[in-house]
Length: 172
Image (cartoon, one colour):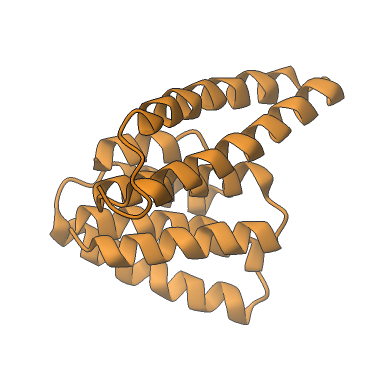
């Protein structure tokens, strides 16, 4: 599961070198001890970003924290931080990151056997990534278009799979 989430997080092209290095570290985690160490660093960075008005960094940190907690086998915390990534990316008007955060939160719900929420998150991710793809295409950002279409295809496959898992309203 961690590798699946890590591959999604790697789709984010992060310009900030510090956050990009953290992204690489988090995606390369192999055990819960490493995850707990990076978690402490990320929590400090969240506090710092609030105090120095770098609120646009917080959604990235929250998404990385979600993955750390997944590796540490603390699924409830992983879902909570994925939710914070969704909310903060929406506030910061970061459509691409918001789509990725919905996708990750959906996979966490799948892991938690909450099938209805899994499908709902994938549906939200699909809507946002389609908007992003269309926007990139209209603006002539073909690199962004190809990347968002690649993500859209993967989300669509996951969504189609989720709809075949039964019609449960809350749990499997």
